[in-house]
Length: 77
Image (cartoon, rainbow, N blue to C red; front, side, top):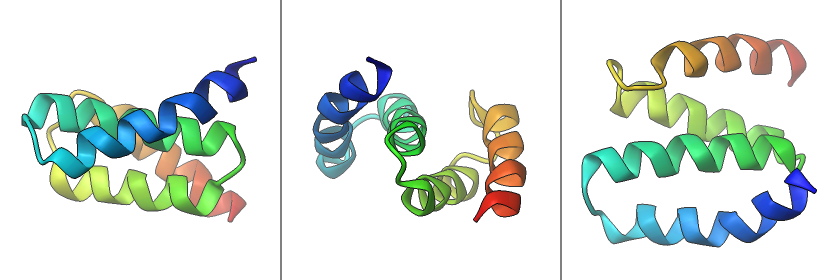
């Protein structure tokens, strides 16, 4: 069921990120898109989003989760 929710959420995350809106919202959308991409099996896209997040928001709200996920994704790709 989570995968189905993520598949529906991905276009919303894409729209937020394409809008170039508020950083807090973009930060959440980028993290959410990475998590959803991982859940639906797009691991390389998820890893790319995670790296982008780490570069854009080094002190971001999800920095610990992103760092841990990047470590994990590097070992699984």
